[in-house]
Image (cartoon, rainbow, N blue to C red; front, side, top):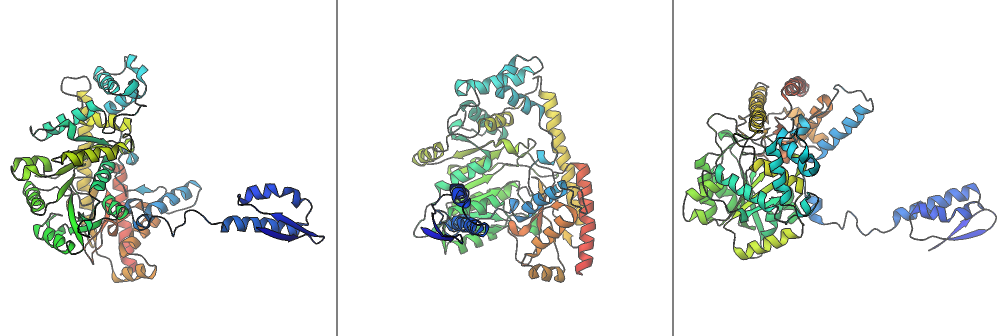
Length: 532
């Protein structure tokens, strides 16, 4: 393309290439020296405009449309704004608070939980094997590290492992499951290690992403639900079938609601999967054995593959609540239920470990067709392997110190200390919210979250509408800007029409949590007064 640039003395013709504007300006510097200042300015503006107008290979209009529509509320606009506020505070901007409390996500260590000593000792040893000669490390930590390194090619966690994970860790996971389930057998070859439970969930969902009879595959998910599921289903262009949990029954599950949701969904999709999160996220409920049996019978009747998201299985707080794995119940129900397809997911990110950033997890897949399993293993092999340090962290979860070993007493003290503190905080949060005007909060029976309902004044609903926000989003933004507390609006998880909720973690350490709840109370009273 040719453009004429007038210098006032003569016409100078300059060839503009498709290079970036900075390269163009360097290339034209010889011409600039011979031009008048106005001509130089026009030339610079022209080259920059051409660079901006150059056609791009990828624009917002021609990206994968499923990526455009997917949303992940836990890291949505509120969290982005919270990070901006943190930077503003660092720059000295005056706020009515001095810190941001990110109660939006289950990131234990970020909220002050200390890593387990034994976990970090083993990770240090496998990362730097010369420490195996250091007498300050206990023998059982060294034994675990040597066993892990023996399973690594070249004796290094920097090498690739099998795509399904290190064999000895898979065997330890099978032993852990068998012990957890009171002797129900577990085959280590049904265990696949993953980069956190999320990775395992997405890898398996891909296998079910196939249109049938001209309809999209349908996946039943609880509402409220963990946004990983809605985001992944949007990304994969699968159909989300929401079934509502019963808030009046402590977020329990009604069989009639399952039937309603699948009957409606069959008109537009082919239901293939049911997702159950137990203990619940964001609702904190723990399913009874009877409830689990009902879900299994329903799944068998409707030929559904069960996804049991059981990453919070160690987080049980309420009196009378107990964790039952779907696998244990299904097997003990006998035929035909013990022949059903089931995937159970576990992670080292939750529980008492809280090692979110290490990305360690597993899935146990049972009763899968051998031909399908071969395709599943082929698909995950394309991802090479899950992070090896994550696998090592998971090994500590499924193969912890045993009674009589040097690290056992300290390990149990730290483990129970975390769980007892979480139990205390679970009650603290529910009690506090139930004392607020217009709030109602079910007991936090398990997991790491509370999901209270809030009744908002009509004026607040109208104010939200005026700024084009959902009322619960409006409330959450006002809370953030006035207190520095970051929560997630209930609309990001799904909720019954006409109701408003939010999710908050119970993870801030006790003293910080007390401060947070008091700030919350003062803000809420002010908010209600303003919009009454």
